[in-house]
Image (cartoon, rainbow, N blue to C red):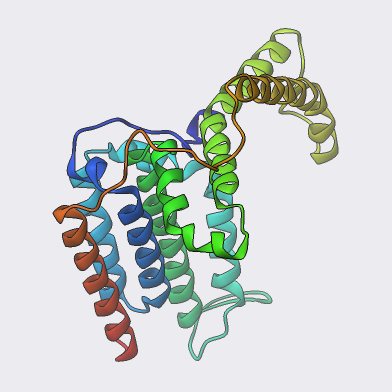
Length: 268
């Protein structure tokens, strides 16, 4: 299960999706999310699924990697589907199971909710797959640069995000190693009730927290040795510049978003 968590991973490539400015990708994801929440019919959800499929094709990210990112949240997806399926009132009852009732509206809502969550997760993961954490945080810092006028520590927040994304795969790998070591010593991490499973996680969480604090201390020492003192006076090795492909991508994203909103207004 831990190996299925792909958040923070970056797959290097030389495609158009990889070459886009990170600010463009962030704005496209925002437009994508807005369009997803405005989609209300099979047509609009089909358009969003088609857009995601085109982006996956352009980025050349394996479909297997996209699907693997859904496995850690599979329980949340199923739980959401069950809640919407049985507890959404409707005019026509399809199935009656005691006090539980499946209506036509509940079935439609559950299907659209599951589809929305899946498209949302895969779309946001596609951005991290095609953008390095450093580029992503640089783009976020540039987009939020206007907040500096209100004394918001934009650079520090972006640095924290970069470090968090960078160490997610490392901590997952560390957790997997600790679990394997505990199992080799005879620890039972799977059987028992919920309380017993929670107690069995203590021998994993304690060394994991110790390792995380040690890495944080080493990172802080390394940053101090390099005279890091925040974003004041810092320059960039790679200066972000918008290019023609960024304008085309943003225009296409805006057209899709507006089209989905208009179709949703007319109930299509």
